[in-house]
Image (cartoon, rainbow, N blue to C red; front, side, top):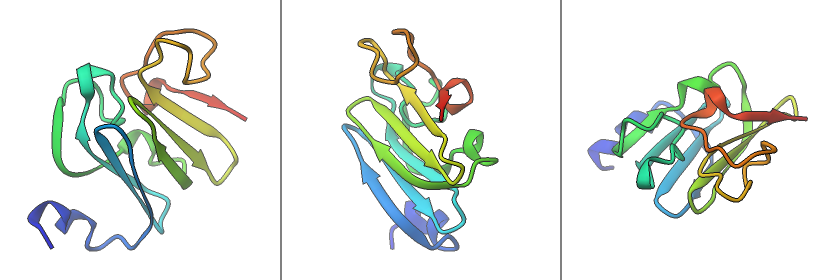
Length: 116
């Protein structure tokens, strides 16, 4: 196992999803980890826009209070489905693909849309 994947060693995984330049791993606990590139600063990793490249899995802390059952990585946007049925979206939104009702992107899941 490479040194970057060591952070996932204590977290048994149930799903992995890869998008354009970002990847996610969903743990049994419902926590999600992301790594890859925030292409053009769209925030699709869920870690904010300040980290252009993340070389090893990082916990997406803004989703910590929402146990997840599924995560999906798109081209430059990402989505998560919570146990509660809520859907979270973040990243590039220039054509309204996040379902926010506008075309403003989000830097992380803390500002993302939650619809049920």
